[in-house]
Image (cartoon, rainbow, N blue to C red; front, top):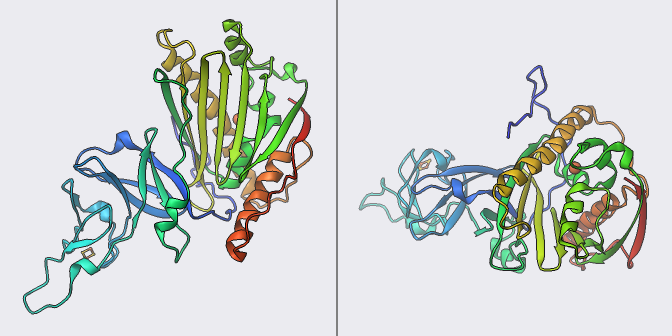
Length: 368
Ligand code: FES
Ligand SMILES: [Fe+2]
């Protein structure tokens, strides 16, 4: 997918930054890019990372900086077991970050190289992503065990999958509220196969609180959206559930008898002012239809691209730091997101459990 993060004049777009949520798992890159003996670079929350896969198959993520004199470790070598810095040849075990060898040490030195560590982050492979746990500054990565690595829900052994990604030149808050914003659909995603502006009508949706997030309760999907109409061919009731959970996850599960479609969308801060959207999806709907995966990818990519183009335009406006507003009810999910995020930040500061902004289930109304 072409990546546009500059204006027509070639000036990089950079809007205001967002407060970042540490102590979370974030997707860094697709693991099929981790080739044997090769190092790959990524950036999460403004932290440059170097990733790779050891000979035993384990994936790793280190800060892309040698603890000796700071040269990126990605400039060095990787033999499948150790990462070697290209400046003075220090060798590191990449999962722990432990220094195993300092070539310059002589018989007169008493320095124990193994007491030196490069920064290594907890890293796990799931659904084709390398997920990396980014602890808050000064905090130990051991907190990683308290949160589980996000999983794409699947409801049987046979399914197809697809993956999409797009860089967004806005901060993570704008990326996330764009993700949950029901009112942009008929304007941004106008297409014959999806919906048109003329199809706008009043909707009522029920929401309920879930831990660190909210759920759009199971409902029959909008009859005015074409992909859902398609599911109707199975002749059974179609039901969809959409969850948002901190820091950045939207999961959608559509079920129709024993047919299902499941997606996990994340908006990940690359830096404080830019982010990236990743969508992974699995389904057993139309399992036997040939070419469905490329077709689904084509339409999915078009959809994500429409959001991306809109956010590039929005970033252009946000550069000048305008004052903004959120309205009821269409922007209520955005308000909950900001309240949930603030509650998480307050809880981290005070040690008290986070206070959920919703007291119980509510109904929202909007036209889309
Ligand atoms: S900078 Fe890496 S070994 Fe010296
Ligand atoms: Fe969208």
